[in-house]
Amino acid sequence: MNIANLTKKIELYERLMRLDKPIGILLLLWPTLWALLIAGNGKPDWIVVMIFVTGTVLMRSAGCVMNDIADSQYDGLVERTQHRPIPNNEVSKKEAYVLAAILSLAAFGLVSLLNILTVKLSVLALFLAITYPLTKRFFVMPQAYLGIAFGFGIPMAFAAISNNIPPVAWLLLLANVFWAVAYDTEYAMVDREDDLKIGIKSSAITFGRFEVVAVMMCYATTLVLLALAGYWLVMGIAYYLGLAVAAGIALYHYFLIKNRARANCFQAFLGNNWLGLAVFLGLAAHYVMKIYR
Image (cartoon, rainbow, N blue to C red; front, side, top):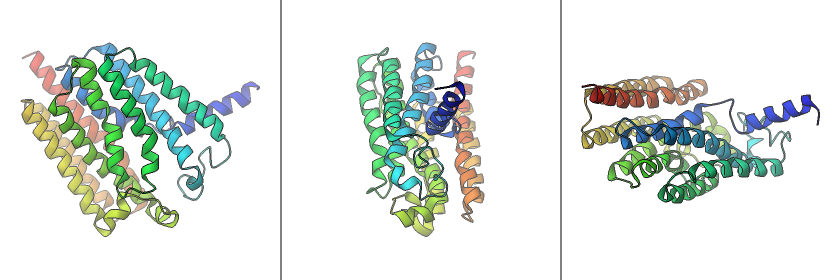
């Protein structure tokens, strides 16, 4: 294989892993960083942090490959996904399976450097990543399952730092489930017409004409649960200011999605990166103020 062909193949693998679209990495990363900050009382072990950041990139990439393998018969029928490498016959399924295996093994190799509880949880995390694409065939709310899969870094972070999973970790995971339903419903609103044609399930279809209200209710529930977590953890004003900024971002999303225009719904989905960042900055500011008080 010459250099040009090798370069093209690497670019195809990057597209298959969605490295050209980092929003999925960020939405997976923010809840994990929240948990690492809380579990480490503002000063988490940086080696553990780097393991989780690198593992997040690897597992999100593996998840995208697994998703495209599972959806290969559908992606060619959907306008937004018809040019992905597998339906476009640019990457074979065999190559995709090998790539997913390599990425998963690399992630497991990193986790194996941590304690046994975290290693055990990583097996469940892999199961969630593998099975999520299948839920779109029969589960009317696959976005909720995605929220569990995307938020599983939360209990893993607590396990890695403190070797136990306190109740607040599950509260944060529940908040992430509602957040995922909100942002992935916005994403599903973009594909709703295509999903109806091919028989794929999604929350945008399940909620029907009430999908905008449902998204806003999920945002509200997320913020309430995060506020409860803050109360539980005796967070200061900085944390709640971060939640207030997140609430403002969620409100802005209402004006984006209320008319259900595809481009605006996708823009709202992308904007969730800033919501996750706002919560993280509120947490970080709280711990900085606590340390230097």
